[in-house]
Length: 276
Image (cartoon, rainbow, N blue to C red; front, side, top):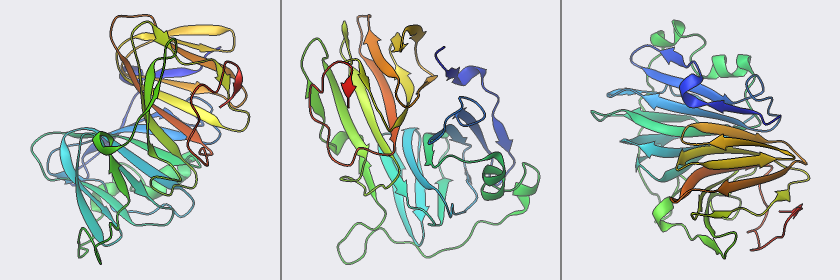
């Protein structure tokens, strides 16, 4: 049985102003039975923010889908928009601020995954109680000594790995040990060309979650298969044979998240049913 959720079918946690936002838990221990990854969709309303907080036991990565805003990590702040990928290291204070007139929408990924209790304590206890918190007033700057302090990358500047037919696709590793210095997460965008597929393969020690952005196709896990499209979130359990198939005439685009992360860049054409 393929384990998946669909964003439009998931009830979100709704928070009040000044932290007006909706968080949908798509991949979590209580939704898909994940062991290593939590993935959610976060939409922050105009002129609101997340409450500033830290995760003492988790690493978090944001990938921004639409809107514009700011991300604060410890005492530094950067402007973000569609295609930005930002790392919040374990134990760092972080906050996402929407100072614009449109919704700020992003994917949040955490490893190890939250328990329900950890999520509530770090994101404002409860929906009602979160409205009593205050936004910390930290001094902010975007660089220090000529070096980038907040660790981030944009999709347009990331180098892509291009694979040939019949596995024609482009993978852009955004959050990885060799890009942002992640310790628990690997996140990439993946675009599969029309009438192509990923090669069937296994991750012996890693869990993988996909979130589909655009296009339509099919996902095969072991001997089962489902149709997928925008908003689908699919789990590849450790040790499962998995494959993404684009049987349509448009590009199939999605985010792939793996934990533990790949320690070094992957090689092209790892081969069917081999470890990747």
